[in-house]
Length: 301
Image (tube, rainbow, N blue to C red):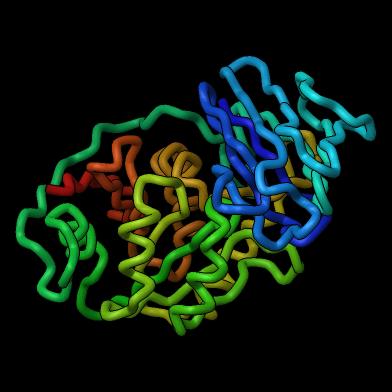
């Protein structure tokens, strides 16, 4: 179970800050905090903390100048619930308690947390020829990603790390938001083998839930147009929701459970999808064999 603070107004509109059970995340304007929001000049250097013990989430003000407010009332410390609002500086956040429930997308069955079949294992020991500066494990991941005739892309969640938008801007690679709204959280980015961004995503993002990788013989815009159709879906009760399929936890649960027709619809122009396993020393590669999802475990050694 995790708690997510979603920015619904302010300079980081759309950003999502995740706090896992047993963790404390301090939020502020400077690098002294665990999650700095440099864009908000009204935050104190260390403004407030989110403490989550796995059952209760507590907001604690850290002696900020402008105060921390929960549902309109200034607080020093308060246990918050799903749906509560938190105002700090010039930013407003809504609390979401994410239990990883069954998620039903259009044409898809509910997500579960178990895999219906055993994975095979492929050990990649030779480092990638182009992988200068990478560890053996990182080179093994690159070897799994780059195959002749396929273009590599990544779907990255900008809410996972405040540096991601800057990384995308600085890299010089083609990238585009998955949806057109100003607060778009996920982006699709092209990753040529010699891209500087590959170094950043592999070294900083692997094992931290930044998103997933894929390969396709189609171009970036085709891949983006395909996945855009899965962003806004309906739950089984008919309520609208954002389907965060780029979350590695969701992909790991969802893809193996797909029947052939749903796998075909979800993969679309993609040949393979590669995502971190629960242990970052392994990757999961999803492809299709005879129309059915095929899962392969890659040991990064």
